[in-house]
Image 1 (cartoon, helix red, strand yellow):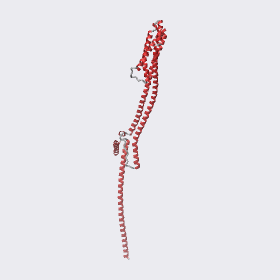
Image 2: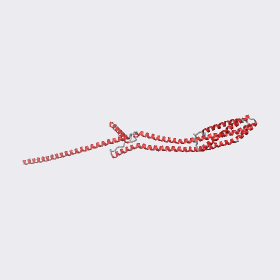
Image 3: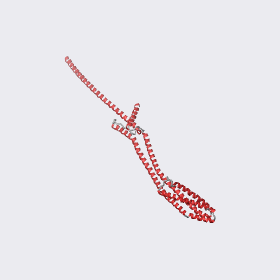
Image 4: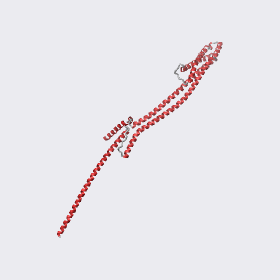
Length: 369
């Protein structure tokens, strides 16, 4: 167990040393595999969300600008319609007052309405003038036609303003309740002449200016609607484009991350297979990371070195055993030769002994005869 622990420490130390000297992305290589995968997913998600969000922001900017122009055109049309309505109300009420000169009660009711309509006309114009005052240098016109139409209307309002003052004065001074029958007829004639005199041309010209401005604003409104449709289409294109770009970047990053994780494993697997198939224990697995794969590669290298050392020890032992076997075999051969020589000498001695014994027997036999 102690030797195995030292082995792991050596493997980690070797991995750190190699990484510090060869890997430019040392910070990334020091991460564990799980951390790399987590960071990869986090970066992919961040790119997708960030890219899509940027696309939404850019698209919303164009769309908001188009919506503001459309809303501004609607507000202008509403203001112009109010101004035109107030002018028509004043003129209509004037005709009603002229008809009700013989009916003081109805005349009084319509006179109160006239005063109210005149006040409304001035209020509407005050709001209009605040937005389109000639002295207002900060105003931005959507077109040159709008600027010309507004300037023309502003110039002609002086005549319309004088017309409103004369209207108030004429009807205020010609209240039928305060006049006799002859005075009513005279007042009716004066009011009729006033309503159909030069003031009519002032009002008609003022209404024509309002109409011209309205036509310009309507045209701008239609253009703003087209711009809004184009902005919505552009918004969709930008969102889709940013989403596709985010997917492309995320895909490339995913490929890079997967390769960064898989390449060391593939190299380690290749070395392990080559060592197993070729029995080449001189090979070493490249250590390019400091994660579990890097530690495993260092451990495999140490294991290959240990196996190589064991094979060398075994080879040396076999060579020594071969030497011992040859020496023993030589000694056996020598001992066998010596034994054979001794056997031969012994056989010769026995043969001589037999021969001598035979001679002795022969001599003894001869003596007995």
